[in-house]
Image (cartoon, rainbow, N blue to C red; front, side, top):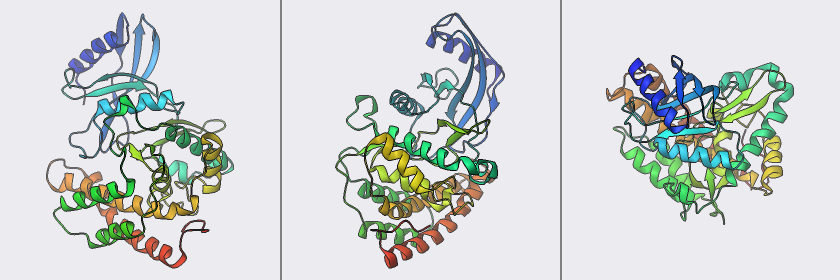
Length: 354
């Protein structure tokens, strides 16, 4: 919890960063989600300067313990600025404190978007059904805007992946991450080897991969005509094959029970690809999406196991983290089913494994 003293320190710091005479902050409210980072909702009353007036804010800072592969807050802020500049629908980034000098932990401030990112609402609310094609197409456009950012970028020189093969890099990461766990996971090892043996060609141009573009990090305002209002959580971004993000949102683990809708439980790949190509002007090899679903499933299983280890190690007692680790068994089952389907049916000309 942020103390009154910390809140006053943040207000004073924010006034200097925003060119204001004074900033008053409301009591912070911890927002839902954020197993890896903490998000606090605050309302700011700003006197003087370019942001004068009432401004709804989010303060994003580190959780008590985190995942080593996630970006620090200063890097995430730089990613948010790059995405904002590319026209992606993201909360406006306002100021970053990278050193922890104000509260003891690095943080940044951004405007607060309206809507919901609740995956079960977005995947299961029948009231959204008439609007799902338009929402899904809009998500395709958002991803294309993100993918318009390509290396080299001096403001993003901390990113991994420039000049490397995305699958080879991921496979090396997966093996190192599995080796860091106390127990063996042979099905995931099998999945990693399958990824190696079936590796697609490296694309001519790498793009900024969001790294966690999926239901839960995509905010939709459902009042009136639903619309996408924010793409959130940039802590896993890297330079990558554009299809890695597509495979991530299409993986069954992110459909939240709405398995019949292949894009995050929200809609269909045909609508998503139409929006992507209309915005980005390029066609991807959509038939290869199931391969990238396998990569996404292996990756999420390993992340889930590391989340559980945060709890099991005693570093952070959390039933949420413990339950997340149990998801790994479901991911292992999905890896076996999906690789078997691809081996039997191939990729070219197929519409996806479902």
